Image 1 (cartoon, helix red, strand yellow):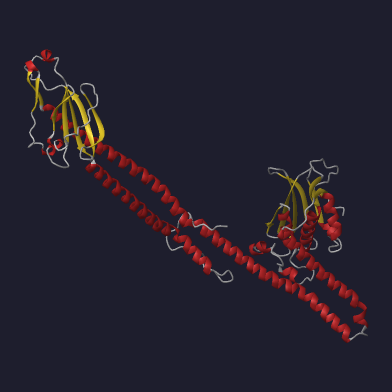
Image 2: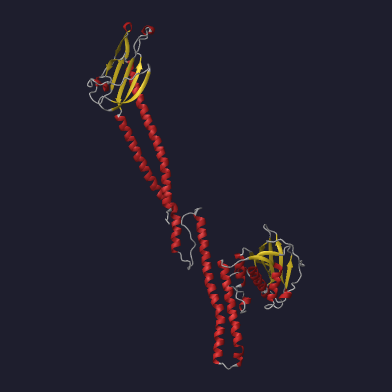
Amino acid sequence: MTIKSIKNTLVNTMTYSVSAIVVIVFLAIDINIDNWIDKEFDSALTNKANYLKTLVKVTNPSQSQVEFDFADEFMPEFSLPADGEYFQLWQDGKEFERSDSLLKFKDASLIKPAQALNTTEFYNITLPDGRSGRALVSTFTPQIPQDEDKDKLANLMPMQLTLAVSKEELSNILIIIDTSMALGLVAMIVLMRLLMMKVIDAGLRPLNELNQQLKSANIKDDLTPFSVDDDEFIEIEPIKNELNRFTRLNQQHLLNEKRITADIAHELKTPISELINLSEMHIRYPNDVRISTTYKQDVLSISLKMKNIVSKLLLLQQAAAGALSIAPQTVNLRASIEQIIKEQLNKHPSAQHRLIIQDELTTATIKLDAFSIHCILSNLIDNALFYSPDDSEVFIRLKPEQTPGLSVCIEIENQLTANLSDEDLEKLTMPLYQLETSRSNPDRHGLGLSIVDKIAKANNFDFSFNKTSKHSLVFSLNLPIINNQKNSRRTRPTAKSSG
């Protein structure tokens, strides 16, 4: 995979785009200048030809005689022995006059194309001396004195003038102009590219600063929030904020990982120590009936406790990693809750009397993963029974949620034995986090709500909790409705569970 540079891409793209625009502008200017110079050249040639035509006059009207009153001293360019200009006059197909510059070219003659009267045409030609030139050919009537009757001179033969001058000087000027503009164009493009590189370097400097800060950052240390020295940029601000947020989250994850590792070691250390101590005592006093009688049962009990911890940790890891096997099937929600209540009787003998089901559903079944909903509700009900006073009631509410898409809401509300702070609420779903009331209980490991949270996310359930009063906590779980069959068994809102 080729790694591209933002700087090079921007510089090249801007260079190509601006260069294309500049080239088009320069070409338009160059073409206009060339056309203007050519037009001015032809205009000067026309003016000179018109002047020469004014020198052709009728001197003897009765005999239609014409003379060309030309003086070399006023127009020396037509008498130069070299690099001069040329003209030639014809009347009735015969040469009437030629410039002195043509005398050295006796056999040479300027072009004399057939042409209508009072018309003028331009031609690119090669001059008699070999230079490239431009010729003006004009057919006209000689100038008639104003007091003469023009009708009497109707048979006056028209004249044809060919004026030829060199274009080499003009061509040289155009070449110089074109070369200068081409060099200027190249220089402008180079300067623009250098300027754009400077501008883009300045624009990318905040990103380079962030990059340098990222290179020197160590997530294990206390990081200073990422920032740039200059004023805040609209484009850089969200990147900086997201980097700071990402860093904080990763630092928090690292701290959580360290805490979880330490907590796991602590949770497993206790039963391992018990096994070691029990085994040492049994080895040291093999005949002590007090030890040997209960040794096997004690080892089994401690091993099952360790298995319970490891199983919960594996379940938590599978749910967090998305490796939990989810197989949706039709589940009768009310029947599942009643089955869970029966299972809780071993831990909480008073569960049958304390748990109150308030069923407001008009549906009997929903489609979801049976293991997931059983695991979630088991942990929530167990948690509610353990963290509430022994004689208090725990409410399990089943009700339709009034939100788009229709869903079933399960609420489990219990009283609290101690007030929970906001900090405690934020940490309830953290793995191995335990309240002070459960730290002394060897059967509580702080994994239940973490497992509930991860399994709910894996199933796209909406799981939340909050205090409804100072000593009351409610857990909410929203489930999607798949089947809207009518419930065949209606329950009074406050009927106690039959267990």
